[in-house]
Amino acid sequence: MTAPPAIEPAAPARRDFLGKLGTGLGILAAAELLAVVVAYLAPGKGGAGRGAGLVVAGPVGEFTPASVRAFPGGQFYLVRLADGGFLALSSRCTHLGCTVPWNEEQRTFPCPCHASTFDEKGDVLSPPATRALDLFPVVIEGGIVKVDTSRRISRARFEPGQVVHL
Ligand code: FES
Image (cartoon, rainbow, N blue to C red; front, side):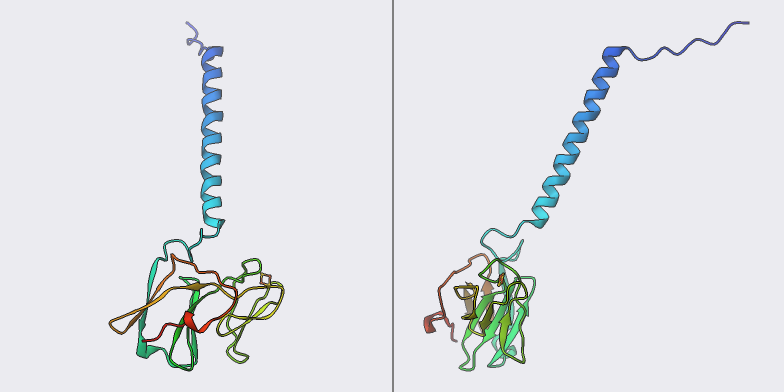
């Protein structure tokens, strides 16, 4: 009776190569995962958000005067002032970028991070923020309100020329 053939261990050079290949693939996978996480967490560069672009807000008649409507996907509020004009305000606080909610009762945007407050035109009511909420261009075409979230406009304060009328 003969003994079964012994399985020979892999040659040291081959084992070394496989070890290095495994390490390299592990590093590559970790780098790819890191890139995905960073891309997910990084804020948009100048725009309102990933892939937002031109947002069709809706027919003019859907927005009553003296109203504020949130567009979370575009990261802005569409404000229709009492005179019927429109402003698209960024929802990012100009202090350190926290998202500001709309308080309908007080008609303000109070920042939850460091207590800056903005009025319905985006002007600063209380610091530490020093300048008004950013704007996005509003276009009204064929009675439809559209907001271009790819163009963020920074400003010191509200000025009547920023309001878009029919
Ligand atoms: S981020 Fe809004 S007050 Fe600081």
